[in-house]
Image (cartoon, rainbow, N blue to C red; front, side, top):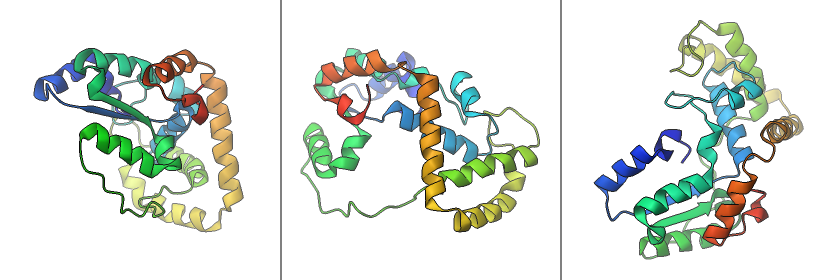
Length: 220
């Protein structure tokens, strides 16, 4: 769950009350990549915090909430297996879907006891994000157009959206892909340095429990 609120015992219990025989399917993603993705989304929404502040000043329950503890996947595994049982929980990495989508779907269909449907165009990309480097420049625009308010509440920058969209289009046209790749690598490197081995033990324990080599996808 990207939504930290769904990782709490109270929410898991509420889901169980509504669906006592339900099946839980969790898609996980390498935490470094997910944190970078969260941060880019935060900036796109008007955020002005630095990456370090975003990671370390964790909050839950806000529009742009982020709490790195909610990305402890072993805790999520334990929470939902304790309530729903192991046979009713399936965890698959997002990276598996990217590398082998048919095998990913086959496991999901089997778990849900559904006939498989694979006549899909896996090469098509919809709702792709704007270039991350554009988001880097947008943070400066956010600072300039900031009108006050809590950085984690609903966007207080909406009055500047039309202006920001026009500026973004200009950046998207003229910024080369090499610069975009450099910016993404820099964000990931900075995130790795800040997070360190924070998720190492959790990811390794989960890998053993679900019998899936997460090391293959750089989880530890």
